[in-house]
Image 1 (spheres, rainbow, N blue to C red):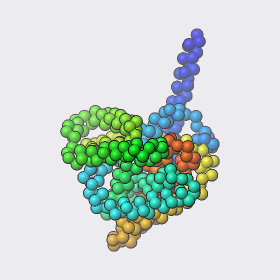
Image 2: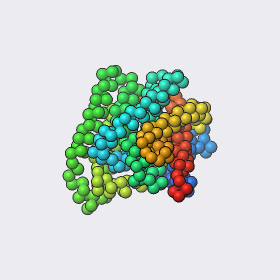
Image 3: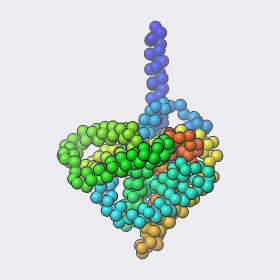
Image 4: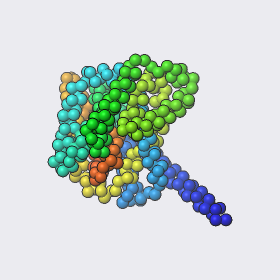
Length: 390
């Protein structure tokens, strides 16, 4: 009798968890619909929802932490995998060669000032390195979404924005292992080994991708797209997990796998992964908000505003540098506005640092920066559209 009662209680707990998760997804769907209506990115809404339902929020949510942890991790991996589908190794190499000076200006105008401000505010070397990455990397996801919404996908502005985004994303390959080694307190030699491995893996993937397409995938994309979806999904999760265990960024590993899959294969996978990416990325952003106390965000809001103002000015300056030779003076402002939003990578950096150190306030500041810069980017793009485009 006792075992029957225990089984019944376990079944009740499982069913209640299913109800909670179902309501959670309904809420995320409503927020996505609201974002479409308002013509804004859904990311700030997901973050604010997580903040409202998290520790010290309006209605604290008691949902399976294991589910959210795994879901958030898969969300980050899928975000970067699908981003990898957008680029080919040849395009990346050409972009790096053509726009390296823009990438250098991006470092000087965003990473360096953020690191200096972090040192001034007393966050030390770890904080300086973390904030340098958080403020350097724009959100490729938000920028690409805004480009699609505005219909500027084939414009020269979009091409120049993409070239900067590509440069930033590629620099994350050596940066994240360096950050992980630094925050884990590894020795200089251990850190050098970690970075060397990261660069070696990245260069190997580039060489393989530039060579030729993986045999058999194009045929599989036409005849068995479902099989291809399962294989790529499984391989990506396994490689990302193994990469993390080896001290390499799982997110970057996913990005490199996506970059290997080009042409018709990437096109086929992109359409099939889109719904999965939306689901798990929503969980990622929601979980980031859930893991943070609302009161803690309020306490660091002035710092978040200071970094946001610095970051907005830096990206607009990069926009001017990249688009200064364009005849339309509005172009450089649009380029800068697309680059302003911080998002998925910034939060991955913050989560990496917090997981490895006792750094207090980094996730809260990052959430504030992501929300503020995304709102600014969205409003600026709407303002910079002509009357005909509106």
